[in-house]
Length: 392
Image (tube, rainbow, N blue to C red; front, side, top):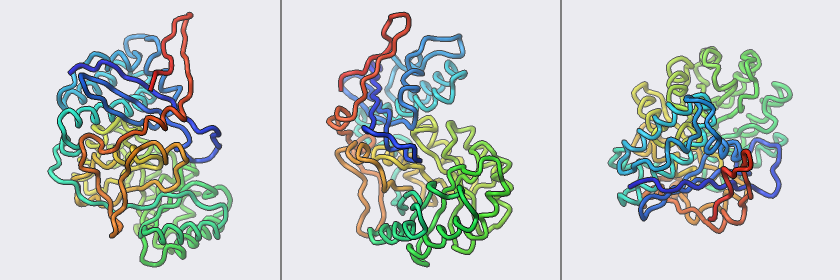
């Protein structure tokens, strides 16, 4: 097969709030080859990513992503890996944005190939079986400790024995206020539940401020302390990992390629590596991280806060790993992401989840939703239209 078309769709809620919620807009990719098509979703600024797909070449190291994808052969997983290498080689000067843009396209390539081969993606990756995972409800802190506690009670009532609280007011006032939120979350979930805390890089490079929160996390028996400092501050992650061995450090959401994730594992002292398939370069790159993490005895966790399509794409790379047994499950997406797919990955009666066994992602995008939230965009250079919102 030859890649005949790649369409990028910018979807957006009518109102986008200035909060830590990436489900308010999105970049959807549709790839067609032969009689097949595949869909994917990137974690990116949509218009910026569209520009990296189609912008005129600056020089030999700054090609638009389109130059590495259109017309390429797509018959095997090795073709996807070859295309990924071509993107990195030809677009390395804009590599961060190129990685993000290509992530959604790469996922769509896997989805298409899965449909062509009539296999779920995890089998194309080489796994024989998909292990069931314990999902944890991923939610934002409440504005007050009372709201945080009520969220924990609600999530526990919906069948979740594991909950992660993040962002919101955490790290923005005092150590005491943060501790009250953590203890409220523990009270709400119960002593037997898995509780995780995501600081959302709020402390920047201030490792001392991040460390001041660790005693409360230890008291509340928190499973991990996620992204307390900037994503690339590997030495600071390492310092925090030595403060209290009872509180493991987690990170990796900010890794936009395999090498960054590898460095965090090797030099950051993390106990958990969390990878967003829609950010790290796609399924192939996430799979490499999962395999490397397993070889180093580090538990791999997906990062997913938005849609069921993003959840599906994030599960395939570590579907066959028994030791990586937890999965982030988005519980507070905006209406856009709630409606984005026709089907979902439901939680079973025993509180576990697994990838769908259908070909490709196992998730079907709702084209009516794409139409409903579609933003009309046109990119023009010297009166030549390089991009215009495609027809759904």
